[in-house]
Length: 222
Length: 218
Image (cartoon, rainbow over all chains, first blue to last red; front, side, top):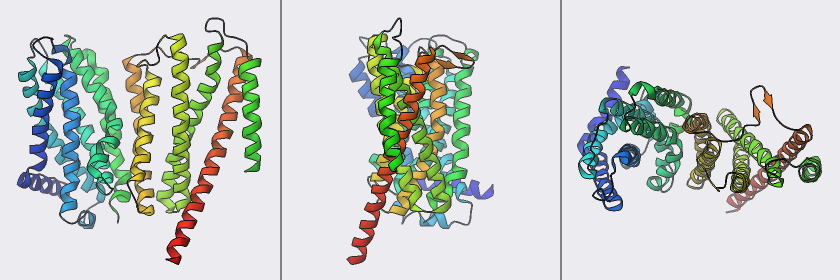
């Protein structure tokens, strides 16, 4: 447990020193928001019903940037051998990476939501706490699946291009559940009626939470 | 192997006869319903193919024997082919019966996601050069992909549902002759699947042997 906490800390400190992932993901989100504005025209159309879906889409694509940086840092620093040689369980390394990515994705949510709301002119009642809770649950699944897939892609050719192709189909259940919760809340449904989708997000997180235990050794043994 | 050739060949002939001639014409949908026999048979074989990819991947991780990896790859390729056949035949049927080539219906959507996941599986393999690492990573992705599929299916089922469910819990609405045609088609398609995987795995083994010999001479 102490080793895990230390590894998470190490991840966050090394990201804080470079701040590559944070900057690129935040700027990408801003660029995406402006593109949505140009493409969908919030002056002519009411984008309120689309807003939760746009938030989720932006989050998922910005997340691939965060996740690809997570292992690119190791590769630039001399390969994944150092990680494999750490005197801790290898699953621990994956969980630490996932936890650090999760923290960064939460920060990213706090960038994406206000930027999209401000630029796309969202009005009307949306129950923010349940929507943010759904995004947080989704971000947990994104980080877990993304860490495993990024570890594979990082050791392949064209890692950055490969990651979204491998990852996007695996994330679809989380995308659907987050977007359904957002759309339901925007339409005025009480959070209690959306319990099904919250349970789905929970199930998704649990399935992906167990997988690193089974695959950490084959991914990090070289 | 020779037996499989005959089983696949004779099975397909018999399945075509059963589906096109012997089975009665469906009252509401007419002849287009006959696609159903090919459609369900290829869907079933595709699921089997991806299960084999998963199991062969796990067997590889345990034994580190590249024969298992070739089996996993061969099964994934044939599975992708069968998934394409499932989507194409379903689409043709849907155009006639639902009036649209594509709907966001659960089983359809799940199958499309399945297609994407195993296309990505082949993409990952292409991006890895070292055979041992490629086998290891492909097995990991196979595990991840396979366990994602039930969650995908559950999620789209909650989303919406209009797929005709013939074989549900405790009900079976098929004419006996139709059921017979379905079972024969499924058996024939499974034999064809086994034949194609066997041929592909043998080809992969020959390729690996040729590469090893070239490396030895160089």
